[in-house]
Each structure stands twice: as C-alpha cells, then as structure tokens.
Image (tube, helix red, strand yellow):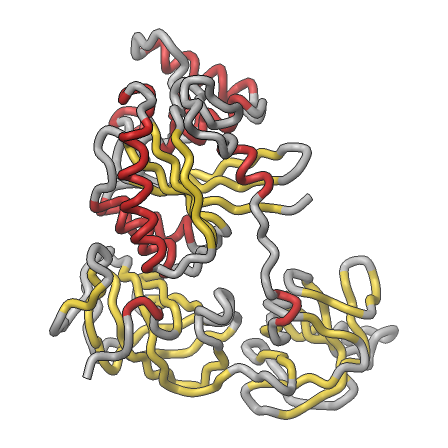
Length: 424
C-alpha cells in the first residue's frame, strides 16, 4: 500500500494531539496497553471522558502541561493506505522540532482553533511547511462544537488561509471543519454541519493524489558505501551501494559519476532479492559498472544529460537550532549533504526571514535559536547538489558543530520563490 507521511502543525492548544488521538482511536489503531494507560491518566485527572491527546503526548512534561514538546510519531493504516503521523509542537520555542517533523512529510495538516481563527503560529507553520517543500496542505478548523458548528465562523478562516497558501504556491490545499473531541468530520461525516459536503478528514487523506513527476526526474544516487568482499569467490567484485534519490537507472545505461564528471556504463544492479534490471526512486541497491574508476563514499551517480550542480559555494535557507550559540559569518562547521561530509564556513549572512509577512528583514549579523535566514556557504571540497525545490534529498543538508558534534542547523539549498529576487 502507498505510504503517506503527515505532519500536524498549529498553535498551542488547537487540538493537534487530540485530533491524532481521534484518528487512531476511531480507526482502531491503538495498542491495548497505550489505551489503558491513557484511560488511567484521564481518571486520575478526574476527566469524565478519555483524553485522546494522551495517546500521542508521551513525555511526562507534556502530560503535566497539556502541550506537545517533542515530535511524536504514530503509525496506522486503513485498507487503502498506510500513514505516518508526526505530531509537532505548537510553541514558538520548539520551531526546530516542527522543522524536524515536517522535513520528510508529504502533507502538512494545519489545525486552527475555530474560536481564535488564524493566529501567528498558524501562519508560521504554513510558511515553514512550504519552505520545507511540502506540496499538499489540509487545514482542519477544529473545535467547531464550541462555536455551534456555524458556517459563518468557518468561512473567514478558510478565506484567510486560502490567500496565504496561494502566496506560498503550494500544489493543493483543502479545508475541513471538525470537532476532534467529538469526532465530527474526522473519520466519519457530521450531521451537525450539513453545509459541508466534501467528506471527512480520513476520506480526504486516503484519496489524496500523491502522483508527481518522479518518473521524469533525473537519476540521482549518492554513493554510501563501496562493497569489496575480497573473498576468493568474489575477489573481483566491486559495487557501489546507496539509495536511489530520484529517477531510475537500468542495466546498460550510461551514467555520470559526480563530481569528477566521468561516465560509466551500468553492468549490473544488485538488490536485496538478487540482481534486477532496473531500480527506481527509493530502492536501496548496489550498482556495478564496467569501467575501473576512483569512486568513494560521497560521490553521486547521475544521469548524463541532466547532471547535478557542483561547487564550493552556494546560497541556502537555514533554520538555526542551537541553544548554545548563534550563527554568525566566519564560523566553521561540518556540513553533511547526502552522503558527503566536508567543512563549511558561512561566508555571508544575507537576511533573516520574517515568516509572518513572507518578507526579509534588513541587516542581519546573526541567527538565534529557531530563526530562519538566507546565507551563503563556502565548503572545503566541491559539493554535488540540486536546489531544494528540485530535490528535497539532494538539496538539503545539516550543519554540525565541530567541537560538540551537535546538529546546529538544517538547510535547504536555493532561495524560496515566494521571497522574490535577491535584494539589490
């Protein structure tokens, strides 16, 4: 079955955890011990109902405060599709956690409290989701039971976020009025909102079309490991293992080896189930070539016609994640991009991005925790990359503090189109 990755986002107390709990509970995807624990905690807090948020909020601090702090991943499936749900925090101070949870998502599920409408965090999370390349958005206007299920409350929220998501140039967005607590329009439809006729949330995410242009994307496969058994039986075996990041490759196809630019012919493709004639995006394989070339971890196989870019300098958008220090020009880091690791220095910090107004703030000499900015990186070795808009895998990277080995930044190569051209 097709897998759909969903990241929830929204302001504090908009009901993200309760919504995920409702999805899991109504689709019978809760383990008995987890359900029993949630029932016990609910009774201990003198609640006369099962607190569905407890099914995802696992940390003690989360349960005590009634908030989400860390990213909680939950899994469930229906006869039509498998799902991974990432419940991300709503607090501004946990923006980096939201970035982590949304970085691999196919769909962003923005939850809005019907009583409060679109708030700053609603906009912030929509912008970050678009920045991270999420193509599909579902907006759930929650707590409709507290506003008497009124259409005139729902429509202004729909209009405001429709305008924002149009600005962000996302591929599709859909709006659903729900009550996560009472189950209206979550797994089943609601008789109390007859003015809404587009079906419940579960039906929408089951039917969401994820087809894209992956078959037309150029071939990319970063080399993760060089396999040389050196046994008597396989003394002449040399293979290059990795996961196909995009496109496809076939036996007999001519490919390019980057960053050298040399070409080679694929002589065999080995999979966990034996030799295959073809590998596509997502396949973990070992490629053998006819030529004897110097290839090591960090190199990238690509199509010969549409090759990735190479260079020691590029522009990128970075979310700063370190509590210990701010990001400043001239500081050295280690950069990890695909399977390649090198040293990198911030040669220029151009601006900080205001995620509320979709604009760039003026002069910026540092980025602090959870801030997002545009910068230029210079690396000690040539990097092989695409823009993040072209490939989330080959266009992303992390920055690592050399002293502590802590991941301090997450970056996306290129410049978001909705920010407009580089200021003069």
